Image (cartoon, rainbow, N blue to C red; front, side):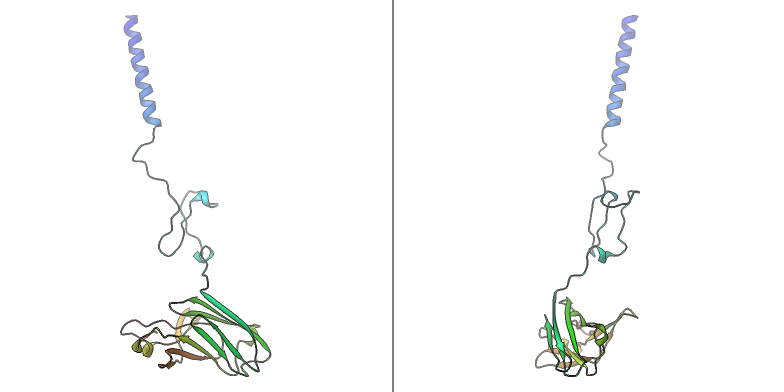
Amino acid sequence: MKRNGLRRLAALGAMLALAASFGCSPLPTAPPLATNTTPKGGVQLLRDDDDEGEDGRIRLPDDPREIEPVEPVDSAEKMLPGVVGGVVAAGKVTVEVPAGAFDGMGMVKVTVLDSVTRHCRLEITPGGLNHFDVPVKLTFDCSDFTYDELRRSGVQWFNPVEQQWVQVDTYMDFTKGTVSARLEHFSEYKCEKPKPGKASW
């Protein structure tokens, strides 16, 4: 009787140990841990151990530009006397300041943000000079456009109030392959290649 009782206790202990070992082992069907990933658009998803979050949820940043700021493709700046004027060029963007465009001295800066759409930012310092007595000429080198693309292209200005691109008066030089506009102030402009059958604006 005692011998049978000991055998039963030993068998029961073995079964308990086996059950405990299954309870502690990781299951192959367990969900994988979230990892840092960067989806289309360049917005990085962050785990809570990468940031200050405590709920363990993946979150998006409030402003993606804080993580991946837009880097300029090219830029150039030059101090110009308004009475004389001058030329500032960066990449495929050229700004020609005529004599008498503004009073005093001004630092004119051209920043190319996208070489494909020729998106550029034009600035002058001090900012009080950003209204010209004589229009400044902005020219885009579009020599890679076909004749039809050049004919349908146009210079666009970004309206910061409406948050949209607006077509401005445009001049084409089919011999040089350029597209130009005359500006009364600096802002952001572009001249992208039009899609087949459509104008660029």
